[in-house]
Image (cartoon, rainbow over all chains, first blue to last red; front, top):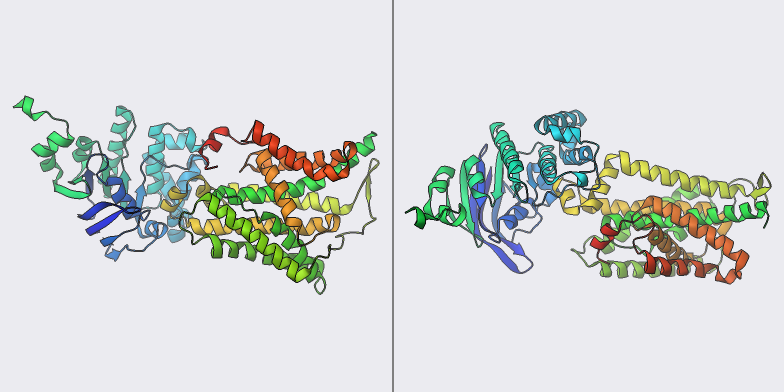
Length: 243
Length: 296
């Protein structure tokens, strides 16, 4: 579904991603973990088209994404839930969702849009309760649900999520992760970027560890969870004491 | 001052005020999607009136107005496509200076085509001396045309932004441009559309008001200053603010003639602009927390 080879990208003249390669298969939940500044957000923004691909190859459904603008990538089925929610704060919850469904409406008509709206409301009942409220008045967790719901409205084949748990209370984080599990069970393909490595690896099929713009480790999620280096660096286990 | 005279001043103020409001709304539409003040906004009003007068020489009035509005809209679209769209994340200051340059360009081209003569469309109904009487207040039918057409445009715009998909996409673009891109909205096209809309309403206003105020190649500058004052007074980006601000400025100007020499009329706008910038830069209806996030 998604295959990245030797991708390089960054901001201005600052190169952040160095020869990065990874792939995501249909129906998989793949997570990318790493510390602040490792390049996780840069990677997703490059995939979404907000940043330019400097070199390397990004194939999505067999098509090269080089030079394709952001809005076209959404039509192709790759959608990003951006870091920090980024809902349309001055618009109502329902308007946010409808705007997320613009590509779906263009491709399959208004009925498909209304069906998907129902589907999203059934995933997030709280959004139905709040549908006429301004998105800016929602709590952090509700805004995150709205951001995910808005992305789902286009019926994407690949959902990329950037730090969906950032800045949320532990109880809400649990909700968000159970939603991602639900998406996995529906057969959606998810590329999840997280600092909360334990929770992310807990629901993912496979994972990559990103450090200073390079993939330094990859494997099945369980193996990564059991890996001593990962445990020390990202899961906060003090192995010396344990031993 | 008698009641009739008072009302007469108010009617005159409303006529100018609604035109200022339309110019201010034109500023707001472009400001909301791009964050820039388009100082060529007054030129749209001038172009609308001037082109319509030229067309009216060989076309019936409605067709002449239609043609003028379409040509002005195309001018607006070209402004964005040729001069603004291809700039990759330019600074706000740079874009504003581009629009000032464009306003000078349009003005000089207009001077070349039409010369310095003052023109006007014929009155839509009746003529210069036709007037309707409302309880002693005499009102030209053209004033009703102006206030009516402009009110319909304001109402139409607010329905357009609230209930149509394109309107929502434009609001989404102004709310959060990156998020709009991520929803598959072509934000570049939305910006072009905002220029087209601003040009269109400016041109319509320029046509309906020209029989009363007359039009000339250089009226754009004054209108831009007053429209800008109104936009700031009402709060940048607020349509309600633009209408209220426009009416306040129009009526104040109209009453100023009663207490001050007429030559001071144009100073009112500048005085208000300075006062509001000193006292409440966010304007009457602007939100100060939103203003704090803006770049200037």
